[in-house]
Length: 411
Ligand SMILES: C[S@@+](CC[C@H](N)C(=O)[O-])C[C@H]1O[C@@H](n2cnc3c(N)ncnc32)[C@H](O)[C@@H]1O
Image 1 (cartoon, rainbow, N blue to C red):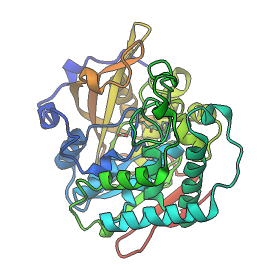
Image 2 (cartoon, rainbow, N blue to C red):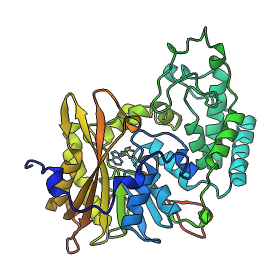
Image 3 (spheres, rainbow, N blue to C red):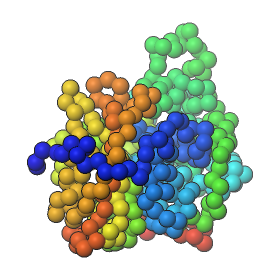
Image 4 (cartoon, rainbow, N blue to C red):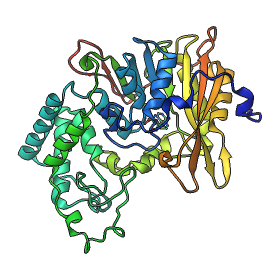
């Protein structure tokens, strides 16, 4: 590959200014956005500005690397349709929880009570729990947690499942674990020694914490006719998306950064509760490490090209990663791959730069992202797509007037 060009050379007049998403959106965004934490989560203000600039109501907006589902949720809130995908079972569960959230707080509380009643009646399934998972919980709290998650599976309650994942670990009293960090699972035994803080290591009942979480999720509820939203969700590798050719009007996504984040490791406790015992296997399957990044991202770009309508925009948010003193300009690398014919043929319209303030950075030590770049690509109107889609693990669809999602394939 030839040397990447400098961003300055490429910069064109901006129609997306970072001023549009300055400041915190925590108290302004729909509170469903805050259902559960996710490393690398996009700021809703930025997503809103991108969707407003590049799509119109009714458009189908796809995110092949949806993570916690910021893009599909915001797309629905803005009157667009959404197609979302992520290979991680945690990302799939959180996104599904958001998109399938009940229309009202009353309906959501009803689902929570149904899960709690089922859990009280049936208990957990007596599965083996590894020591590293036990270390996070009081034994009774662990049993109740497993029982409620089992109820979510049996009664098919994705929103309640996502709420449970959202309160799984933290230092605060409204959470289920012993004192632990929130984003990634680390016990805080040294900061909060059990002898000094015995109350933090006592039994924590699930019911009041789950009901309070549901209430928090509806503090700023969706304003639209929520039940009528049209969305599609898959858990597949983005090198083989389960979607038709030339189906979507726009892609808005934040693909993994070059060697930057350990998405499965960071979510290993939540993944265990979702039935993924070996997070290492998932991390190996995700597109991240230096050896696989370029060929896999090239295949992902070819898939994005295939599903886009000719001439449609593809907006990718990417961070520069500094590791061991060496900075990788992921945005420029991906922009260059996108222009290659193997990726189907995109035109690069612009790259917009946004500096990430310290408090939003996912890592502050050696492996850290300090600049986010928005790469605006467009599928060439005349180019042909090169790949066909293959298989997927799960794919869900909900169209307006349907009561629930239908599982459309499992391979
Ligand atoms: C930067 S994060 C997306 C964050 C998301 N935009 C949000 O706001 O929460 C990148 C995502 O790509 C997913 N991922 C990495 N490689 C993948 C692949 N080959 N296929 C599908 N998903 C992948 C990871 O699981 C991770 O959730």
